[in-house]
Length: 444
Image (cartoon, rainbow, N blue to C red; front, side, top):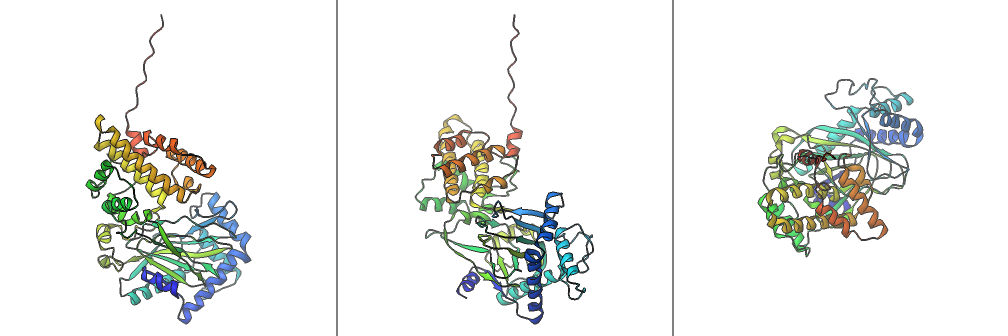
């Protein structure tokens, strides 16, 4: 109860089934998850792997698994996809529907007693309504990005902490398997200052850590916090302004104070408003839950119950679009931030007399990056960086290798500071003029 109360204060609700119909569905969830994870594990894994390996498009792998046990995400068709019936679940190539159909067929269940997409959605929306009543906040009228997340066996080490871009939508985790570890939620320390939500508070946070922030970097951050980013900076990242990105992801710079998690029973639902720092937990056994985002009614986008009014107002065109697919861990966020700031420093300070101050600013940023990598070194970062960003992937692989071996990384820091490729986005590198090859002089 203490953990639940603390989560509630953080804007996160954990609800258990109350009504007879909800309890009946919770029993179905448990039976279904046992069917997938244990009773028919081999056949269900075959359905999953067939989709994953043969271009089925509904199965992917999440970070946090191991070499032996993968964590799968199995997406349902979107609501505007007409090739399935929400209740009848006609034959489909979608792996999530195949799992449901296989379970219902093996149990000889009628349409009234079977487990369907529609029943899973309705259960989630019921929990959303409960949150709205208890918090007297906006209602969530539809769902998006519905999927199963599961692993067949363990142990796994868990995910690195991260933020999914959710606001103003709601993150919903419906736990299906018995004794299922919940998502881990992190409470972050702020060092007796303001949380990191914009360029000014980021500079303040670094200085409270005892860091000397170079004047050139401080000037760029504060002057351009609200500057609309355009192609001269980079369009590759899809960022609108520095301050909006920090409003969403800035807490990733702050140290972890403690973490909260629960063992849950089938039907237990976690609902998180806002962009909370969280991670999939380390596990010892199989685990399964359904995930979705709750989308508010359009007319309610102005009323935010978690204090994100500015962000909601500035992003009201993204209602339903912020589905958690844009995800950052501390390391990956700072890599992209470095790429943006390197290009801004180059653009703002082109003259030769500024070269030293630009290098100083870049070195500071790279040293912060190395600190973040040391805090949580993991090779999975390499899988989350696009293949076309080969230079930063190779550099990061070298950094991780040296940290693992206990070797110094100073030369690699200088490589990143001096390079015109490592911490730059592909779109900027493609626009650079190609160096002309010198013509060979004819030999006499």
